[in-house]
Length: 278
Image (cartoon, rainbow, N blue to C red; front, side, top):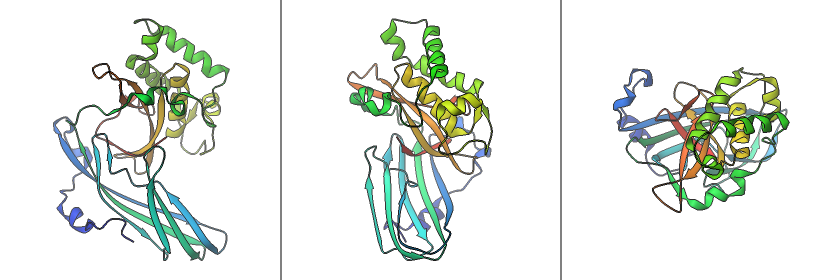
């Protein structure tokens, strides 16, 4: 099933595929990525009228990133397919499969381009007061321990008054570094339902847990922030990080996006491809 009329085989053939480890990324101004993703769902028995909602294809445009073409292949006949942008402008694919035996496979091919000289990612200033980015979710409810950490990190910010500190990119960077230093990466020890406070108590987790803990701390410190799901070159699977939304000082009334990866203790760069935010 082809989700786009563009000939993706032609697009792929035109790419000069390189090993990302052999590239001098400091010299890169514009680059294209080929994403190939395969996943399988297993069920205990036959399923009728399966309805699937997929967030695996990036938005057409996101900051300096453009989704050039994509194709989604499904191992069963798809009766209905549609796509829409959700409340966060993510690209959502809806599928209706009349019947499967036990297993269904999805295979996605995606070509994305990014530009290093695009400039900052700018959003309307209204995002700075959006409660979705300031209030806790079910997985990011703070406990006393996380509240103490947030108070400590805010107190360490020496520049400006309280309001300026809450809008500080330096504070966001300090939170990112603190999460990176404090937590230990441990695969398979937490799950998709693990809460930030639980992972913090354990002292370890995966990228989702690092991102959730950073979200808690940013929001406690007054920094609007949101979760990002995407790809990091060399990881081989999906990855999670955090976007912090700050006032664009040179563009009054607008906000600037700063993306941090607390799992690796850095800001994101051309190694990262955003698929969805929330």
